[in-house]
Image (tube, one colour):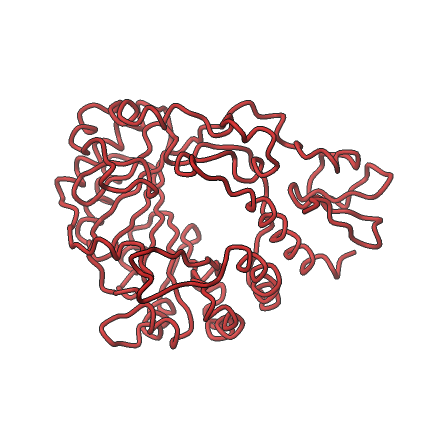
Amino acid sequence: MDRLHYLDSEKVALDLLTGQLFVKDSENKYGFTETGTWETRNDSRINCSAYTESTNDDTLTFTIETTRDCNFACTYCYQNDRKTKERISVHTVKLTLDYIENALSASGKSSVIIRLIGGEPLLAKDEILYLMGGLKARRINAEFHVDTNGRLPMQWFLDEGFPCELIVCLSLPADHNRLRYSAGHDSATAIYNNLSSLTLKDDQFLFVGYNVHDQNMHDFPRFLDWIEPLRHNPVKRVIATNIDNYSFNLQDFENCLSDIEFSEWQTNIAIPALIERGWNVPFNRIVGPSLCQGRQPYSCKIYAGGQVTICDAMQIEDSRLMIAELSIDVERVNEAYGDIKFSDPWKAPGCQECPSRIVCFGRKWCERDSCTPGKYNDFLNSNRAVIQAKIKDTL
């Protein structure tokens, strides 16, 4: 797909990667930015030449599995092959706090992002409160990202005052209650009512995830109408995601919507429907290559049983050490996973000349045997849909 999108009878063009607007034969822009010239339109390596390696963000990321237990039984859950009920102990939380504090000191970073996952992570309320109390006592700057099904009380979590993002998956009741089963109850309506009661601070955000499959893709506009009373207060954004298939779920659920079909649906149906109803759909911007959680030194994932991997893409059976080891020797994670921690995807073989690199930042360790160049077109298509909806009345 051509990254240059013409507007106004080809007198004005938009760079779908950078957001720059150009007037033909002039360096004056109706600008989103102040850089770049018309002549850069055919340079597929724009924004790449400035980077020789991935940057290491000033924030460490830690994923913590609080429990594998769950109050739902979703037919497409990625954990359906290992339904167990382990729950993180206070002792493991303390060891995790020790490691986080030491990792910040060793890395010179200033803050942490803590991702809470499950099962249903909020089932471990006491352990989460202990974690939050420990962060406050140690004066660790932290923000939380929580994937929750939204059925449990959440105000207690928000009242602790940490900056956070909560993501709750939801669809219309008939679809949601069939696929995200909760003991025969109307969980969709219960979640809706739960969300409507929340009070968030300015640095706390609630997102709704619409899990898309071939049977509910056409319901999306009606879904937006259903949750309209929650728009902006408390729900800030709706994010659509194509549901992954897993072999162990195929007897009960199979999503027949391909990634290409999903991209077309998102461009032609989802984004216009969101913008038409006043939802915020951001223009994707290139911010430069940065190390993912798995590649970044010291960042890691701690399972409820204390096993340590580097991120969600690495399964528990591939763990090479325990949190007890890290609480004593902060460098052990970089040593145990040195083959991943000390390699840079920006320099990966085969990536340097790929136009997708500016979007995907190079092949991640979990993509070592695969490549997804379609991300480039998805990125451009999304931006084209956003700009067509937002700019048509301004030029």
